[in-house]
Image (cartoon, rainbow, N blue to C red; front, side, top):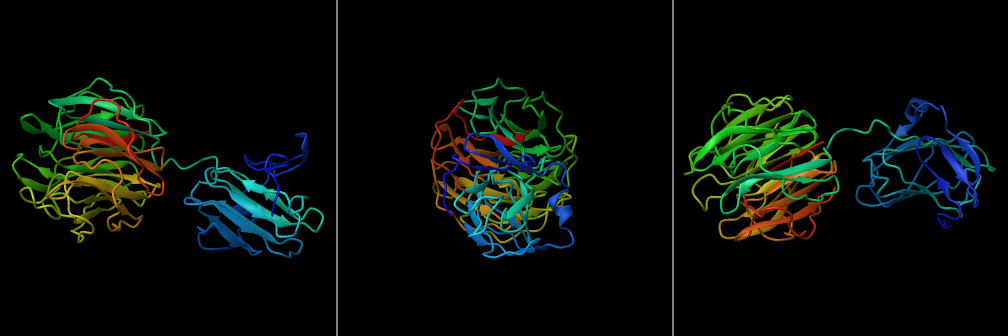
Length: 444
C-alpha cells in the first residue's frame, strides 16, 4: 500500500470522517450523531486480545484493542469482504497520537479510494468502526470518534523538594508535563532531608517526615494541584527519616518504614494519607524493618515498597512489600535485582513502576528494575546516566517519569527522563540547587 500523506490524506479524528481532495475541499463526510462504536456492535463483535505488534491482519466480525505504546501498527484488512462485514479498532493505551495505526485495505477500496492511498489514524483515544459497503466505496468508517473523557490517571506535572547541600534546604523545583525541570522556588516549611513524598486526592501531593537537623520529624507539607507547597502541618505518627511513600486506591497515600533515631533504629510502621491529605496515626508495621528504601505505584491503584537496608551500612536488601488498593501492606516478597539503598522510584505507563539508582554496599549505581502492572519486580537493567544515590523520582506527563538530583560523590541536579515504556534516557543537565536526599511527587 503506497501513497503520500498530505497530497491526499484521509483525515481522522474528533468524531467526523472527512475526505479531502488535493485542493482541500471536503468530498464526503460521515459520523455525526452516530452512537458509540461499542454500542453499535455490542452484540455482534468478537473482541480479541490486545494487539501490540507492528503488523496485524484483521478478520471481519472482530474487535481489536490496539496498543501502540512501543511501535506503530499497520493493519491489513481482509482481501475479500461481503456487504455488512464489520471490524472495530480501539486505541488501547491512548497512544495513536505518538504511534499511529495505518490501514492497508488490501486491494479493496477504503472510503471510495483504492489502496494506493495512505490511511492513518493519529488521535489518542480513538475508536474506529468500519463496515464494508460494496466495491464502489469499499470499507467505510461509520464512526472514528475519540474518547473525550480521557482518563485522569497519571498526573501531568511533578515537584522535587527539600534535601541538603552544605546545609538543609526547603527549596523546590517544578517539573512540567514535558519533563522540563524549572528553576528554584523559595522553600516553604521545615528544611530537611531523607523525607518522602507521594500523591493524594488524585491531583495533589504531600511531603512528609525526614531529618530536620539534628532530629527526626513527622511534620508534613501539602502540595496543591498547582504545585504550591504549603506551610508545615504538625506531625502525626512516629518521627523518622529514610522512609518511602507512594499512592494507593487512586486518591490516597501511604508513608512507610524508616529510621527513628538516625542510628539504625529501623521500623516498618506506616501512616495512611486520606484523599484530603490528612495523615493518620501509626499502623503496626509489616515486613522487614528497614530504611532508605523507595516506593511507587503500580496497577493504577496499588503500591510497592522496595529495597533499602536493614542493619548498619553494608546490609542492603532487595525485598519488596506490596500495598493493596485499601492501603494494606503485605509480607515480604523475596528480592529481585541488586540489593541497594538510597534508591528512588516512580510510576510510568499509567500502571507500572521503576526503581532506580542507589548504593549497593560499595559504590553508587545507575541500574534500574521495572515493576509490572501486577507488582512483579524484574531483574536489573543496565544503568543509564550518572551513578548516584540519595536522589528522588516522580511521574510527569501522565505516563512518564523522571529521576532527579542526588549524590554522585557531591551534590548534583542532573536528571534522567523515563519513557512511557520504562526506558531511562541519558543525563539532562541539572537545573536548580544541586542537592542530595530530596523527595518527589506528582500533581495535576
